[in-house]
Amino acid sequence: MIRVILSDLDKIEEGRIVIRESESLRHLRVLRARQGEACEVLNTQGKTWSCYIEKIDDKNAVLLINSVLEQQRKAPEIVICASLVPSKKFDVIVEKTAEFGIDGILPLVADRSIVRAVDEKRYRRWDKICKETLKQCGAPFLPRIYPAKSVSDAVDFLIDNGFDIYVFALKFKNKMHVIDALKASKPSEKMAFFVGPEGDFTDSEIDYMLRFNAQAASLGDNVLRVETACAYVCGIGAYIKEAKSGKFNHTHSE
Image (cartoon, rainbow, N blue to C red):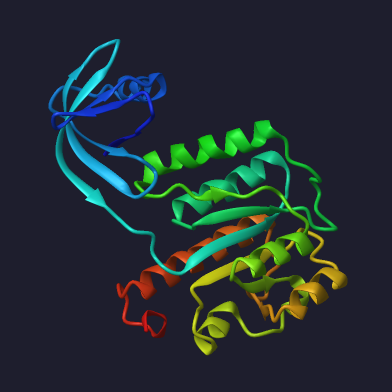
């Protein structure tokens, strides 16, 4: 399915969407979209238009609207707090966050993080990656990308906003597995999953999280790379959302 992102330059009028934004128009042309072909237009905030291409040329594309689907975000709200790693690896984390339908990603500058700062160029790149991912997978919502924070600042921010904290660290290897931990405690309406750096969270960082009743859990026996652990946790988050919505017959749907 061909998908494009609605921009402020595009226009909705008389049952049609006129695509004028150069990136979306270029995307249609690169995919060799043709008159009569089906496509979807996403506004990245839950609204999806199913359309047919009525006309396409060098200046714009006119899409005939067939139907409109408006969705609400699935509970619970989930934020992945991922320790910063070199650019290409963190790009993968951002991509998986969007692909699994996670609500937000907060880059962590942990004590042992390899990367210590994020410039505006990287934030713009991450936003572009999220939009490209939505065009690929059809997820209706763009994840929020939060400003990078230290572990303590991230905990303070999330606690103030009503999140429960879940922390995954190497030192919790022998703790309850995350699946069992989630079964044992009914997931809250707001969940923040903290994934540590390659060298793990420091004792002081872990102590700070536990001070706020963070749930310590294991991702299994193997030592995972940060981007692998984040993808794992994103998958778990996506399952929790689907179960909560009643799609699966599981304790989490209660």
